[in-house]
Image 1 (cartoon, rainbow, N blue to C red):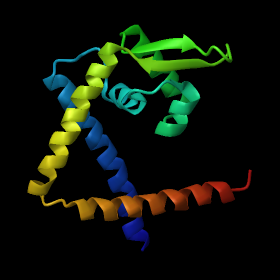
Image 2 (image 1 turned 60 degrees about the vertical axis):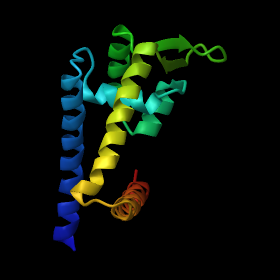
Image 3 (image 1 turned 180 degrees about the vertical axis):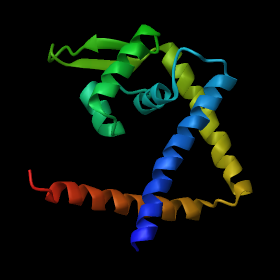
Image 4 (image 1 turned 90 degrees about the horizontal axis):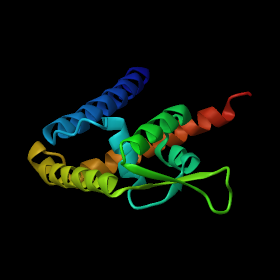
Length: 151
């Protein structure tokens, strides 16, 4: 079990890096040079919502400092609009600009194309459902491990 468990951990890490490479390749194909793959995923996670940095961090499981840096860059490159919350001046809310929404549309098209092409790669919807269930179990296990650690 230990060897299989370690293989799964390494595969998850490798798949995440490979997926970032896929996003980078799509940005290169589209000749988009003012945004990186991680920033693209942040945009996609925001989508049509208006979120605080904290909400984005919690939802996307990003490290807080990386989110703040990437949000700053996305604001500078006009992918995101940043506004003070009307209710709490200490809180900042972010939403996508038209430029950010355009990137989300392109990435959504990529996801659609990939989901349609998965059958030719012999990956079924059931395969993905079982994989997702297993990954959620692993996530719950790791969360429980963290919560049991002495502080």
